[in-house]
Image (cartoon, rainbow, N blue to C red; front, side):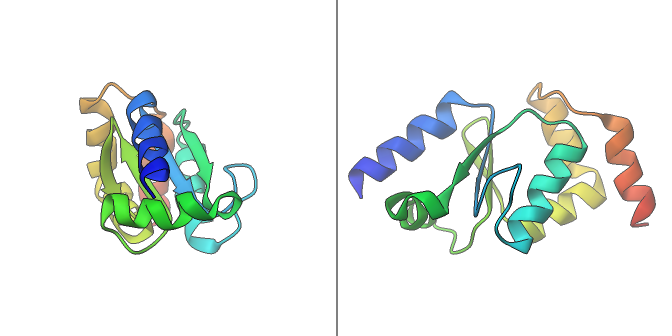
Length: 120
């Protein structure tokens, strides 16, 4: 598990935005991963995706690393942000926009506004 923890830590520290998910950003393998990847893709965030289905050590290790039981898991600037429900809430409240802005993460504000309009 130590190797998995080291790999996870290296990944979240080396990339501004990381999504641990089931599948890939191009082909999510579960609805929750699809929702979070869909938001990030739609608003144009450049992020690294890690397919936990491809590596059992990472799949179990990420849950221990974050002390969070579910996947997907989003990390921004090395910090755990949350899973699907939290990211959905943050998107709809505008809090995710604020987090990206504070951390200098490029995204399409108009696309983000459209998500809120469609769900308002």
